[in-house]
Image (tube, rainbow, N blue to C red; front, top):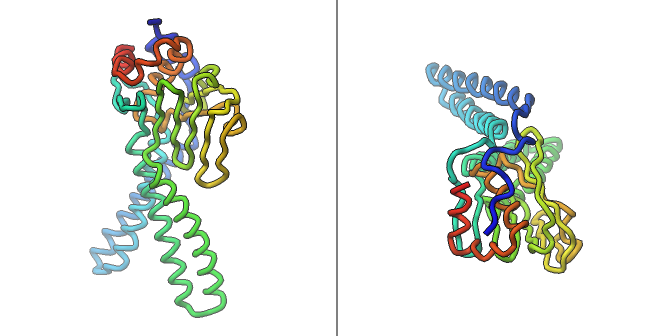
Length: 269
């Protein structure tokens, strides 16, 4: 067996890089709005206005989820000292998406869908032409969000699987499979957080399914690359980068991806 082409430390492309200032600002701003709404809920409750307290509280919960999602997007994809989020399953070694960002995004989609529906109901309740038009617009938006939420619930949590047959990537709106003979190389990129760039070529065995668009198979099924955002992964993204690099360079080691030896190799890296 060969050794991992990458050292256990982070690649230089990810070291010393600056995170998104916009996400940091968004986290702080949304956090302040959340605190203000929570204070408003307490104030309304102290005045005996239960309805007002519920409204302020609901807004605090909604904006609070956005603040937490912004914070996780800012901090996600950090260097870790363990293999949390890396599992051995029958089809290969699995790198799961993190539970926290998955929950936060799902909750945001669900709350937005419900809010749009309720606003549509309120607008329709005015029984005016303008109200019906507004209700229709809210209804269309609610249907779009509901479709997105349905796909999200079907695919979440996302995962990347490295198996003897190839590379599987299940995102939150799509699935990709690329056989090993179509995987050319892997590289570390930075886009306000770690990004794993997998360069591929066309193959009859390549498959992609976009649940919000067109699904295709064969050489044109996938663009000549795939990217994985490290901020979504539960594990240190360097572990996935190292594993992909190793099994691209050492194809004779790929059978171990289903017998536990690969997981031990990754844990030892």
